[in-house]
Length: 191
Image (cartoon, rainbow, N blue to C red; front, side, top):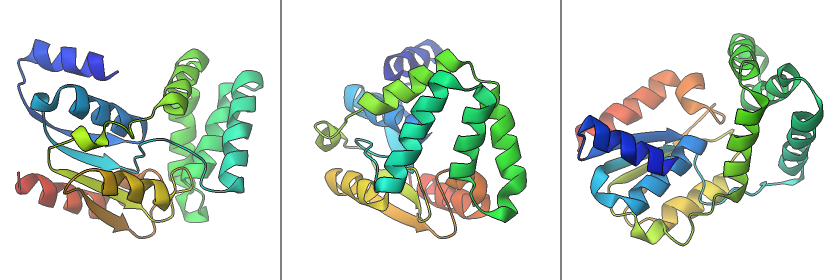
C-alpha cells in the first residue's frame, strides 16, 4: 500500500506531503515515511501502532470473533461487530449505523486483505528511521489499539508527540471531530 501511495505521489508530481493516517492508514503512512522519507514532510497518526497485539483478553476475543465471523457470516454481521467496537456508547447510535452501512458494502475479500495486512504489519525495526515531525492522536477509550501500543510507537520515533483525546475511541476524527481538527490545524500550521 505504501508503494502504491508513493507511485501516486510521483504521478501527481508531489515531492513532499503531510500524511495523515488512521489505524491501517497510519501503518501505510509509517511505511511510506520509512521507505521514502523525502516524500513525507510530516506524519499525523491516529490511533496507530507499530505492531498490533490485543491489549487484553477482551480485545483478543473481539479480534478472534471478527476473524471467525469474517469466514462464516454475512458482511453485515462483521460490519455490525466492528461498528459496535468503535462506537460503543448509546449516544453513538447514528455513527454506529453509518459505520455499519459503509463497512457492509466492503467486499469480504477486500476486508480480509486489510485485516491480513494489519495482522502482519510490524514497523518496530524501522521506527528509528522516521525523521519527519510526527504526532500521534490517541483516543483514550480506543478498544482496538491500547494506549501502551501508542506510547511505544511514540517513544520509538525521535521527537514524536502524543495528544490524548478524552471521550474518544478508535475513530477519533469521527467521534471527536472538533478536537481532532484543532490538533490537526495546530500541527500543520507549525510545518
